[in-house]
Length: 272
Image 1: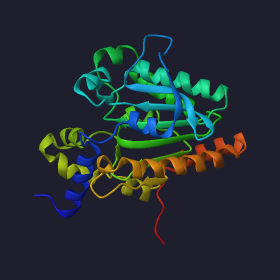
Image 2: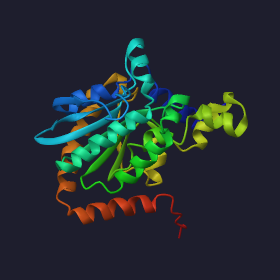
Image 3: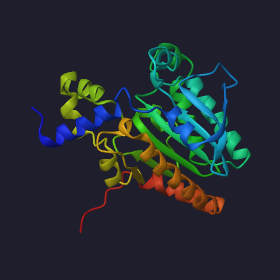
Image 4: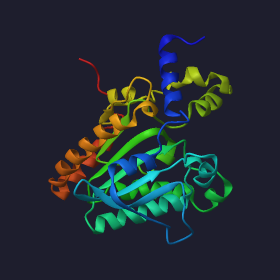
């Protein structure tokens, strides 16, 4: 039997996974005009789980990199249910470097249960691709903003999650792994996933309290699928404002603030 807090947290997990919740493509189409998608990692292939390209946010040219789950069954299979392979992360890194070269801010949209754990992905260097992105993102000389749209799972999310600011939609979740994985590893019982979700502190409110994320994007009562436009308008307005503010910072200050942000995550502060 779940207590009230456990029930509330699990309801947010269900909303994050709602079958009618908009995917990243819908958010890109709302935010960005004249979007041109770019393909391939110039090494192995093009990973459909990662959408990357260039366009305009208002009047500002930006690069967008997003994890896409797909909408129809056919598209979900093509997108590998939003679980990128290493070539997806290498495509993302290629576009990050291109954005840095042309001084374009980068918007990352996170929506993945995790990086794909298949044998082929591991053989092609899944862990190395994720680790390299973490290393490179911390020193990119352009403004970076990451937005968790629905699910942000494990290294699959972190690989495009090192940014100057991290935002989450109100009913999104962001964690080291899924509640089902947590329950299986710690308790050897997947049926405890609902109870484990509250222990994981994976909601936007938990992570804002711990200063891991910087902003919560509000949703209507029954979730994003009921009125996406309301939340998307909030995101667009705030993105335009924040990117302008970050672009005014000298590069050295931008990088110093980003480095300090991640150094401070997890620091324990004793209450007075």
